[in-house]
Length: 380
Ligand SMILES: *Cc1c(COP(=O)(O)O)cnc(C)c1O
Ligand code: SF4
Image (cartoon, rainbow, N blue to C red; front, side):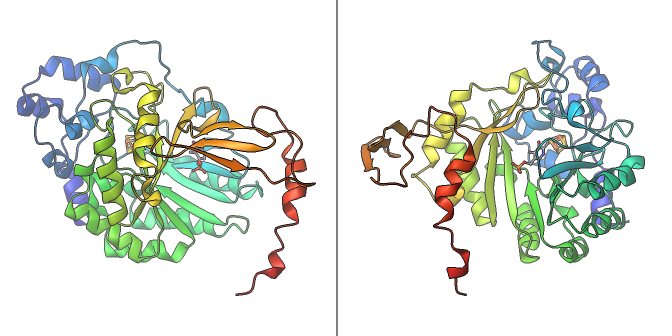
């Protein structure tokens, strides 16, 4: 058996073990566990320094998960955008393909809390149906393998899916969303990486929420993926008492860049039933972006987004850099809070209305821009 499988088998899956280790009431934990799956890899457990620290909070069940705060079981209405089992097709040109019901460990704040860990709800028997759906939708050019965690599949099973998806002519890029480099870096074997690189262009989005998760082992695993030419992005969930302060986030994004991972998204915590105690106010995310933009490498600054409840998709939020836009000038605030003005060009190409308040068809804007995009002029 491969080493990562052995590690996985040694995971903590009984709350009694946790209750003893952290001196919590086993009854309370048992009730939570009956509703939401629990599992922690020995590696990730070893990163917990003390009860209630940022690592602990992400994976150890909490009684508050059973409180009803009027939140939703399926906050993003993913099930409504699911034309066939295991596919979520919300955006015009890309879709999610859920290929694994299980994860290395279970995040207590997971948006798919309703599904993860339940092979009935993310059923591997429907993989071929998913591939057929993608094949019969030529508008899909980007497939995001997700779950659960795709890297919980064996190399052979994962490769079989990659092969099928890659064989579809209209698929330009494949992405894998995984938390394994964080929960079980041992999963990133040289064998896995050798297999993955056959399916380029392949992108990977990993999931780190706290700088302490970037251990030497995790950094090594990420380096291996980067060496295989896999562009790496990171998705972070903004979590109360885990990473909801600018200092922690700055350290996290800087360490990610050192590990050759580009911070991609910071998500406002979704309105998921059982996760109210993780939610921060939206202003906190804006404060964090404000503390990064300009103060550290632009490469380190992710997009702060709210995945709109009800299925609206990801909506970016920015601090107020634009003060006003008029026919003649734009007034802006820079990262340090100073005011600057940019004078608009005067001439035929200038739109007569400013673009902020009024809804315009994008076509009319593109007509003007097109003339500047003479691709033939590019010489390599
Ligand atoms: C996040 C998400 C995507 C990918 O969005 P990008 O902004 O392209 O990374 C695609 N489909 C669904 C349903 C999503 O939630
Ligand atoms: S790894 Fe991802 S899918 Fe799995 S529990 Fe965590 S957030 Fe949910």
